[in-house]
Amino acid sequence: MQLAQTETLPLTGRFSAIAGVLRLAGSGDGFLAGRKRVLGTARLSRFTTMVRAASGWLSARPSDIFLAGRKDVLGTAPFSLFKTVARAAPGWLSARSPGFFLAGRRVAHGTALPFVDDSPTVRTAPGWLSAAQSDIFMSAAPVADGEYHLPVFPAEIAEWMAAGPDSFIIDGTLGGGGHSELFLKSGARVLGIDRDPEALAHAQRRLAGFGNRFSTWEGNYSQVCETPAIQSGDLADGLLLDLGVSSRQLDSAERGFSFQREGPLDMRMGPSSPRTAADVVNGWPEADLVKILFEFGEESRARKIAGEIVKRRATRPFQTTLDLADFIEKTIGRHGRTHPATKTFQAIRMAVNEELESLAAALDAAPAALKPGGKLLIITFHSLEDRMVKRFLKHRSTAFLDEPGWPEPRPNPDYQFRLLSRKAIAPTAGEISLNPRARSAKLRVAQLLAPTS
Image (cartoon, rainbow, N blue to C red):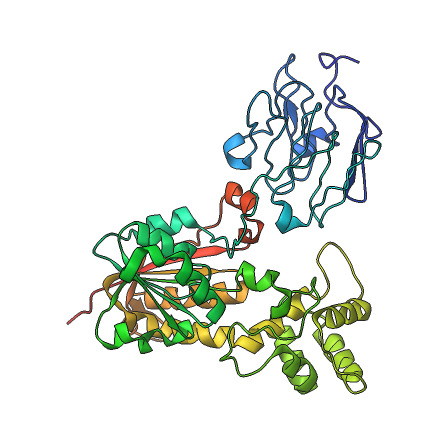
């Protein structure tokens, strides 16, 4: 069969995928994309076997180089004519017939390399496909030794904050110090706030070379106005809040955040948190458990999960993360790729660390921590946080309020900010391919107005 005569191969062709496992039967000379008109796939020319594919489908070219449609958007690229490696955005397969397949960041996705000569197939975390025809697996973004946390929106944060040698920036959620390093490299002074002593110690070591331009303060970002700098009247040119949990906290089994690793039911972001996850799971009344699962986790099966937790803990308290995760899976079953304990763990974590309460307090405190013209940048990772930030900024950036029954609009007494971007900024496909945890992130940006007389 010649490609000049056909554009697709049948579903039973030389490429077959079963239950997320791909076996490459050979170099082949065709492209499998199912229903062409629905998916919009097309052969680029009569003599070129390179094709574009809809998300989640296989794109392949059996000749020298593989490119998957719009290179800049998808992030796919050959490293050279002689290296058989390509990079793929989430849901895409990069392949080159003589060589290797690369499936994103190996550590993040849990892909492994048990290749043998007669079995060129591997299994990966849900939603990812790994395959190789040889005996080597390579990572597009290898995680360096000591990697603490990969910051999201690095380019956007640097652009919108526009820090310079005369700037004073407060990084309200210091984490691994990645964003702070961007500001310090621009010449700014930076105060890093975090309630996690481990994060503070890591950032201090990492950023020690910047001398006294970098300082830290242990505490909750909601207490930004209690820092010595603000107390002394040294207001900030910019305040960054990167909400959620750091990669280091998620990946450390001993911190108890992950339902995929055995660890204690802790989930505290810092020692100042008044309770642990074990306190919540084993001690809170059933009604309170239902409330946080439904409101914080947006879990539709909150009543069933909470009720079964209360029955089980009466005879044997929950002590570890996997104990709780496995119990939830047995209680409600597993459907689809998402682990059934995901929303429950999110809800418990938010309750333990009082995350929404902290965010509300930080939003109220932000205007007092910034000088006129100061920037407020907030990164959120789930809908509850983003709705809260969106509503706050919308209200505080509206000059006049109008209600039914009012004869005319009235000045808004809370009018303080100007939105620099009216819509939330989303990560690019390229960033998601390098840092999959950025896929749910949103960035909102505002600027404090000068007070009116």
